[in-house]
Amino acid sequence: MKKLLALTAIAAAVVGAHAQDFPSKPINIVVPFAAGGPTDRVARDLAEALRKPLGGVSIVVDNVPGAGSSIGAAKVARANPDGYTLLLNHIGMSTIPTLVRNVPFKVETDFEYLGIVNDVPMTLISKPSMQANNYKELSAWIAANKGKINLGNAGVGSASHLCGLLFQSATKTEMTPVPYKGTAPAITDLIGGQIDLLCDQTTNTSPQIEAKKVKAFAVTTNKRLTTPLLKDLPTLQESGLKDFQVTIWHGLYAPKGTPAAVTKKLNDALKVALKDPDFIKKQEGLGAVVASDGRIEPDGHKKFVNAEIAKWSPIIKAAGVYAD
Ligand code: ASP
Image (cartoon, rainbow, N blue to C red; front, side):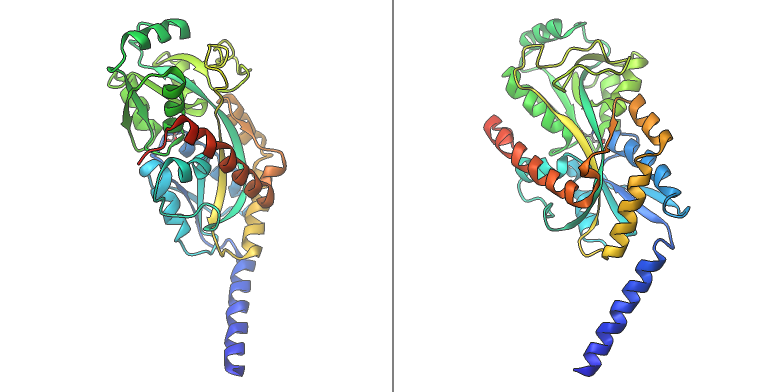
């Protein structure tokens, strides 16, 4: 018994010592979508802003795309809980459990919550050759093309999938879903005209809208945006889709069981990063709002995700939009 207690004490001391040294080697942030997309973009900007408050350590973004973020999130849920493997994921953390059956991780119990990073509106965009030039014309085009419309998404359970499902339900139009491993490949095909429509975060649609490589029709927030590029776009609500409102948020997670001393260091660093003027400027330029409320604390983050699960679950079920 004494020997066991001694071993436990040694193990605790080793974990404690490691926690004290943290971070002493590169940290991986898993992005569960393809490189070049909105989640990837946030992660790369955040990695840069986290570097200094984490003592200059390298922070590597590791893209593990597939299954609307489930594959990457499951990888982090099973990773060594030492703080060196983190997950940056979006609203999917709260919608996947309802949207997709048999998710390979438990959002509520498999992660340590490190804080919310930002909120990002979405935009409804189309291929550049779309004949419609405003939402009214687009809705006439949709009515005239029922059964022939290809709607892209970043995988079953992704934010664009959620937005697209809600859009089909609100417009009472079935469209053909075309899944990708992230927004980046979906936008490439939208620009090429292989798909017709996509609903996705402003972080990635803004540069394409500005370059006129895609057409933009509406935003998914309940108020118009103030970003100069997007301020003239109507909301879907004012375009006649009552109650249509989706805003995407991103949060940072560690595997469950990561020592408290390590999660504290990570949360402290995150709070410094969220005040970094360069990070804020980059995010705001892309229509995102950097988090500064109680959700940047682990407790606030967890409460928020639970509230989002409670909010989205009945909406998804009522819209009858879950995927098998
Ligand atoms: N924006 C994507 C989504 O629809 C994912 C991404 O590539 O960031 O979930």
